[in-house]
Length: 141
Image 1 (cartoon, rainbow, N blue to C red):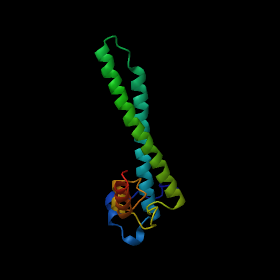
Image 2: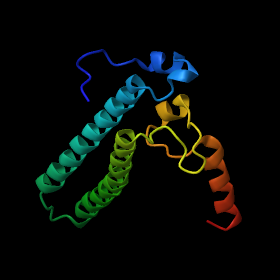
Image 3: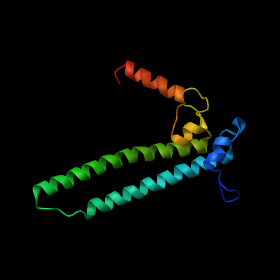
Image 4: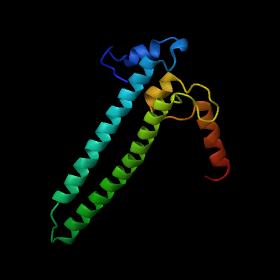
């Protein structure tokens, strides 16, 4: 699917679009572009971390070494979260390809443009997400 034939919608245009245009090809192109850009940034950060971890030389001072190890642990934890986000981005792009993007996986109802702008990887409507969180709390999750 090429976006060269027309300009991508702006966030304002996506928000202002009528309900009948929900998940039109232009909106799907907009979200695909946003997800691909987020993926590009995450991959760039991962490469930076790998390079940073390889570049750090060992230090003989135990307190310096502990600081460096703590920094590495924190950095790896952040990258692990980003790795999980990368998986969610890939899944969202797959949903765009299959025509399921923008619809709640529990109810089939539209998730809503505003929610997708805030969280492009969302799979649940706000109502379904709230229900899931309440159930989790009730069951000690």
